[in-house]
Length: 409
Image 1: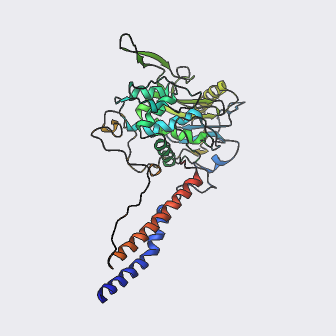
Image 2: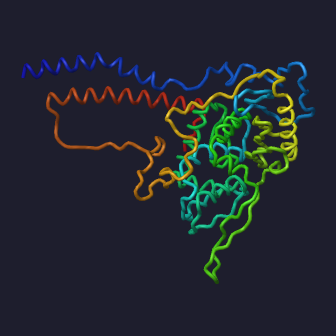
């Protein structure tokens, strides 16, 4: 008995000695991943109000009478920001948030995967949403769903793909994680489709980050550049055959502005108009984002004017900032669409289930009978210390999420 008590005392002393380490360690793990509030992401000048441009000799003047509340012109390859106006101003993004949705979810499913749509997957879509026309109990290929997202800005297509990805909440949280990996700290995601929701915001700078990341995926680039496509229709009750109907890209510059690659437009009654456009000329690809100009048509006019200016100003202005690089650390390939095993839907036969997101799980206590011997109590003590450290970690992570706009259902 003396030996057991002696061992117990030693173990308790070891636990006590380890306690400060175990409680301090989670603090390092949970350190905030955000820049200091006084530092604008991409450069100090991008945090200043008003127009930021640094012209050299021979540089063209910026377009006059720009009405956008926020805009930015950047080089997609180098990340150099050629000019900007309030680029970190947080505004509702409308359907341009689908760029982040695509960058997050597009690599997960092979384009040839076939999915049968359940009724609940196209329920609870916001009133007045743009729809491509998906019907329940019918099969759709993933590539058709993505055409519905990019061409018709279909919120129904976004909802179906979100359910394939494990649900709306999981997708929203993954989008927020992806935004943080891209250092897009102005963005708060509440709906995966960009539908107007209180508190949902982004910025011209962040939308440019999303577009730059998305364009590195050939499938993203293909979908956003597609002008017209045929979309699967409903079954004919008489023949039992399935028809199709045409859909057209709602991007008004596509096919009209020389060299336009695409990206995404967005308009809602409350958010106004926002547009992210990418164009290529003489081997250079420029990105322009314009948020909330005076009218729906002005968002396209001002994007075209700023693209024209950017191509003319290349080499004649010094950058005023930079699009920061992706901090994704898990080795994810940006081109996971074509033909790989990643195309299987979560939960499909023969594929592992996706890991649960923290917000989708709960810990349940388990009980058991019987007491513990003297050696068992130190084990409980160690477990308690570890649990205490975990509580500190969870609390700090939750505090960080509340501070920086993490959405929790």
